[in-house]
Length: 412
Length: 162
Image 1: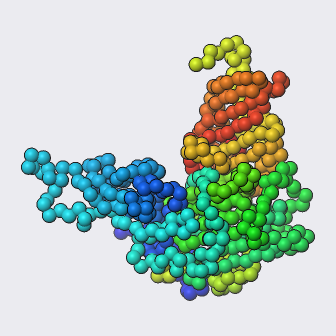
Image 2 (image 1 turned 120 degrees about the vertical axis):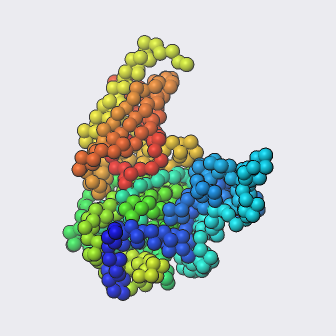
Image 3 (image 1 turned 90 degrees about the horizontal axis):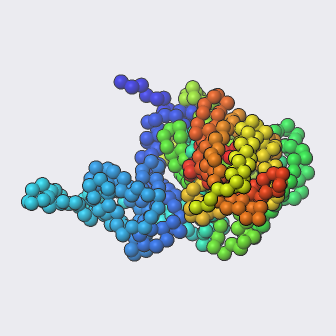
């Protein structure tokens, strides 16, 4: 008999301690796929513009479940498991395309754009022999269908009948933070995939972790793009699962010595860009918010770093691996100057981003560092013990919020 | 199909030498020499075949001046955190796609192996360089080097230029 991977015992009720087995345990990972990703949550799956016209489809994942997202003849967006009802083969093999219907290549079973099984090759057999039994119901066999919901060009999907409507799931504040950024028709500027050597939660925590931003990312700190001494704060949704952190520029903070006084690595004197056009941002949303990072539990990130806009989709790939799917975008009404500005600022993000490069490796440092520490605990104590919104970013409130939501879904 | 004349054969050998020098600068950790291979202004873009096919203009790296190239190297040396690593570039023979008034277009395949500090080696990227070069007599310089990766995914992070 195989030994359990770990105790899977949660250490008390505090949100300030997290056991390392949660990033390692294979059984816990399988339960996450069932109880979170395939459970009562909204997963980000694609952009509405990816499935513009009837028949347009895109294949992606909900957790590890392959799914097809497709625009139906009636204009609605459907999503269903990319798994043939017959023997389980992938139904669609391309990333994108346009289809009248879907047909599995293995035995030519056919599906309509809602994922209903409509045709079985040789259903009646040949010459009166073979074929499916007369009582076989096509209607009772089909890949699992998901509900979809859209918000300003984003498409979310859920497998559970219990998931509340998307607006309710997000809450007014997070909803408002999303619509603040997604002000027009989106235009994709580029897509990149980053393969990360860590558990998916380490990345989500990293995105929510306002404490690390100017400490790990020396580029940010040096050019005063964000400092803990700047204005801003972190908004945490009531259930803890979603967050939005913001930075508002306060010019007087340029003389702050808070970092230097603590001898922190990210403080570097005299480091200036030869070509500062990289940071030539404009206040396109008219509210002075220079940076907003937002997460929707469990797998969605919306990023506004100056004028560099992107959505990121987190896809788990086993306990110790994940993929991060970046889609950079602007708006249809962007002029040439704005477009060029977005292209330049995209140097800040992505696999080679000046301020995101470290996020690609730091999760792996935790995964490797804690390899033998499954029963040890990590410390999430900055800014207290709660998961409420705070007017500072020197806090781990939104990380604790993540664990509050996570434990509810997982029953810990 | 273009006929390779004497001048073109000479040009191809100059391009091959340029690519060899370019690879040695990056692989021998002389990244400070890398911006010198470009003219100013310039375009250095790392993208993927998928993005290139769709006409998407954003890159993993996007630089349009000498300053931006030099800033990239300064950031890698001074600001960014990544585990110690090195590349081994293997660059194919340049295919000259056109030559007019001292402006040369070339396309060249590449393969980059990444060697991590613990000795692990991975095939990190393959693809083609789509180059526009200016012949400055003494030297050829890249006016444009668009790095079109065959892979649309990048392992962990991309630090050193391709």
